[in-house]
Image (cartoon, rainbow, N blue to C red; front, side, top):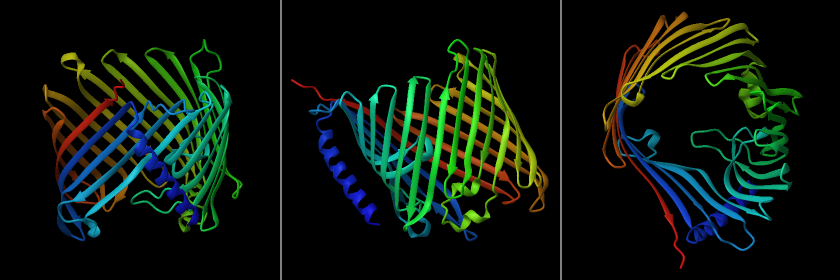
Length: 423
């Protein structure tokens, strides 16, 4: 835990410096959203009244003028919750930081340093949140290397992801629409290897005059000597109204878990999916989406197909309605889904939505073969930045014979930009 403590001290120092620096920023953007909802919450067969109040806050400060720094920004995003009704598990208040970092670019933007809570997105990181430092160096415009060090973040309501991590990626980016890289990630948990992965990623347009885009990703677990995840995709923009793509993906679900997790032994070894996707703009107001994939895993072969038709109507085509269906067939189970939905602005300040879906199961689920869910929402923007939302949901499922829920939300959102005026 010593590394985590050091990282937190560094992050707190960076946060203190950033807080002092925000006062000297020329541009500060802030947004705050308050959500108040009330609903029944069934726990152990008893209905409780849950009234949580959520506050979502984000702040971004830019346009600093510091010696030797070409560009600097400070970003913070977090949330807090207070239970006004009967709290779950005795937790009256909760909260967490999603992002909190300061980033500086120097030496004509060829060197960038980021300190604090951030996301490791590219390559082997796969959107891993961590507290620590990222250093990126681009000796030339089209190539560079980045290194990361710190401690993985355990999200609220999540499981422990490890105590320390080191990562790096070398990349080339010869064009705006083309990039390739090789990356490495190692995560330790109590001195044991939780993850040690090597990854390759690429995306490119082979011929600029041909609307064909290719992308690929492969992640290899070094301790297990197996492919943890791999996919290739080809997308063809046939014309402005028609796009088709083909893809193949392989995943090893057990390698998504830490190697020292006891749950990794219960996961199937591989899952392969191959198929295609279609998007067509049939009319200016009508769109069609569809996809089909063959699924192969340890249990056998299955199929997954879906189609969605969406139309816009009404004044200025601001209303939406659609139909959607899906057919999933696996070796031991399967279902057919049918759904209808609509979003209608019934007045300048009032929006109504409706959604109805049904599932028809191939085999009995708790003695039932059908599931029905319906939902309706009414939203009223009664004052600037204020919105009241009322939602009702009714369902008949194999898991709950009959269920009716209601929820009310009161939302206040503030987004402002402050620009410091210098004399």
